[in-house]
Image (cartoon, rainbow, N blue to C red):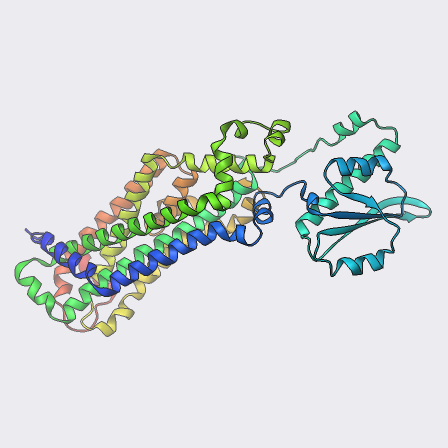
Length: 476
């Protein structure tokens, strides 16, 4: 049989690769670095000013003006009344009028370490007619821009309400005027989502292809290097005494597949444990507590406020919940199958490249077409997302022909499909069709390998170019 003995090659390659110091040290360093990144990703927002960073990331809080110890108001319009200041204080803003000079007070705030602010309210006139109001918020060195923005919103609300009341509008009617009208233009077939979901739909299709590209190409190049090393060192001639050439490539590709899968599982497990240990103390802990309380998730408005959770947090938690709904056993199995098929697709090509050289010095040049194929596949998965960035940042999810093409084209599908499955951009039937197409091309590549591998593995002349390999496959 042409494949007899592949088990021995697999076992030999597996043991030789795992016991090398470079593999052991590299695996340890990778685990340590990635686990540290996981911990820092979760903890850095807390260490660098957790509340503000977290609130900003999920849409910001509406009442961070409460962080100011003192809020001084210079009202040159005479619009705000004692009733307005009482309402502000009731909302948690320590606000009071001051007769101090604005310039001198701004100078004081510029060096204060405490959280204080000055609001200067003026009116803009045109021919003795008030056409607008201007409110400048000056905050101290010990304050934050987030709190200042929140204070600006509060002042805007107080001024707007006082104007309406002065015009004879009751407080009940004023509340009705606050109802917002959100107008969005949607292309037929697209859907509107919140900002957090938009970010997820932007980041995941960019991050996953990069990770898969590194994994597939790191181990694919190892396959080529292993075959080229053994061929140039005459070890291949000894192997050919007991096994057929096709058995060698099958054994080596499968061995590297096992190594890559085991290393990915090990690194992922270490990262998961690191993330789980640090989660309760960082940003993830905050979001998990929201997700865990289904009663809060299903509340809105007043009941959410009583629970101490903002509507932005609820929407973010819902978006995270929707994302995790796609982590079904079938989807996880599909992603693993696609990763394995993608690895086999590129590794078989790498094996041909490694067998086509007679000197290690030629390997880098021989790998260029292989690398270009991988880069092309990754960018086919990348570019449609980049071109769709404006829509995603506007909260609109839509697909384009290039993105759909990347799901089914074998060069790009190993990189594009996992993200599409996680985000729910493809249903099960579409995912299976894409996986079957990729599997068919893996079989096609395997047939090409079986036709030309025996000829090129024994070649010891000049490097066989990629086009010549294809011609050999056509003649066989």
